[in-house]
Image 1: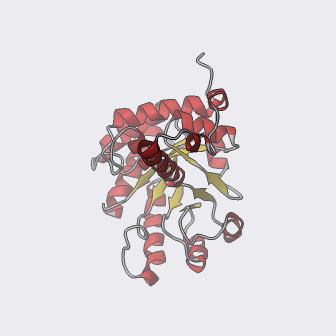
Image 2: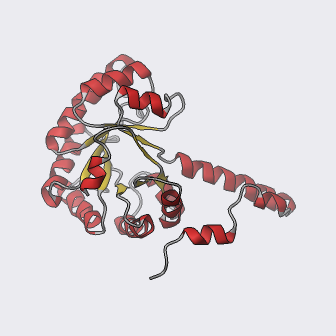
Length: 262
């Protein structure tokens, strides 16, 4: 687990976000240094909506599947809001992920209060000890909290609260303005994590600003769904086979990405 923490100490950690064991295997093969999951992608792959709706048992099983496919790479699990408003229940569920091998989790404030998320983080830390990397997601930008000019200060306030509770990183999805990013880096003691988002500067610029982690979120999964939707609609319309092969990986190529059964 310390290996995952070390990836946040210098430079920019770029994380693709997997939604099942197969996508994790693909990302490992393409050179990912760690694998994170996307709660939206995981939920969609299992036929559920995103938003704390997925049964925790399914989340734990996805962790097991991704751990197997990651073949020793650190794995971080998107834990949404912890699937409960009871910090003790959230901590017990997070402990199951640690027991399954997770090196990190994301947990978000969402529509709840910062104080509630801080209580959840403190309970998790007390239950699992110091090794788990807890990335606290601050939804100030995603939910449009306050006026534009006040959001860095509000996110910094939340970051201080989450750090005191035991968080290791601060995730501010929706933050894209270069000046605000620079201010946010200075305003928090935690490694700053950003989400791939329209208008976000490129990786080299982000690294120069001091950002320590960049996540794809549901972006890769959403693009995959878009391609699948277009192919499905076309196939239903005309039954043509040729489009199905355009840009596709062959059976043998995909099969070779998967870990051996043993």
